[in-house]
Structure formats: structure tokens, C-alpha cells
Amino acid sequence: MKSPKIYFRDTGLLHLLFGCDDIMSLLSHPKLGLSWEGWCIEQIIHILDVSDNAYFYATHGGAELDLLINYKGKRYGFEFKYMDSPGVTKSMTVVLEDLKLERLYVVYPGQRSFPMKDSIELLPISKIKGLKKILGG
Image (cartoon, rainbow, N blue to C red; front, side):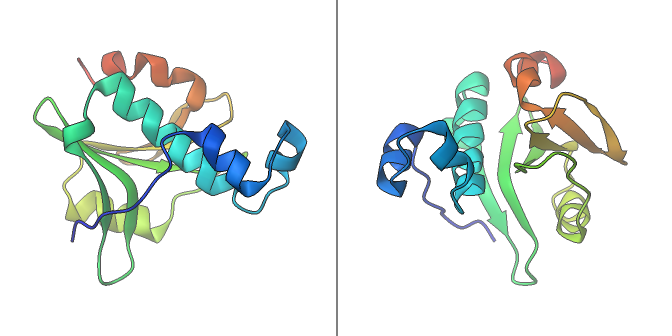
């Protein structure tokens, strides 16, 4: 099922609402991951210009995908993890198969990019500027 999910497009405003007035208070805030996810989603939507083709995806069985986009006739999935070494989850493998994704990217704040599993790749946030080229566009 496709369902709406609300994101703050202005993470500065979100941080103000969280009461975070400096980087240290943000880094220790329990909603840091939520902020990271929203900021990354906004960046990818802007870079690929896909605001009309961007979705949150969830199944009744509990599998979720943070961002599903249709780009140049192909489906791509994105998960956002604010951690040093994210792993592949059952939800990722279920969504990859259910949606017949071309590829699923796990975006994280680290530096290395590498395949995690068939069609699932770890992607550093520093490389999303080149996302059009990565996706063949």
C-alpha cells in the first residue's frame, strides 16, 4: 500500500521545534534519525526532480521503504540510516522483491560505498549529488 507520511521539508524549523539550537543538542536528540531521514529525502527529491514520483511505502505485514521513486521508467528504493554500519534488514529484502526495484540504496553518513546484497547498495550521503549519473540519467 502507498500511504502518506508527513516530513518537515525545512529541517532547520524541525530542529527549532525539537529545541536543538546547536549541533551537539541535535546529535544527542532521540529524533536525530527522523531529522536525517527527512533531510535526505528532501535532497534526493530535489536532485532527481521527482516530487511527483516520490512515495513512502509500507505493507500490512510491516515491511517499509523510506522512499520509493520512479525515475526514467525504473523503480528505486531508498532507506536512510544514521549509523556507521547499517545492515540489510528483512524489510529491505521483502520490499526489493515485492516492488521489483531496480536497486535499493541505503544512504548513511559514512564514506564507503559498496554492495550489501544483491541489488542493495550502501551509499554515502556525500555521493548523492551524483545520483543522476548513478541511476543512469
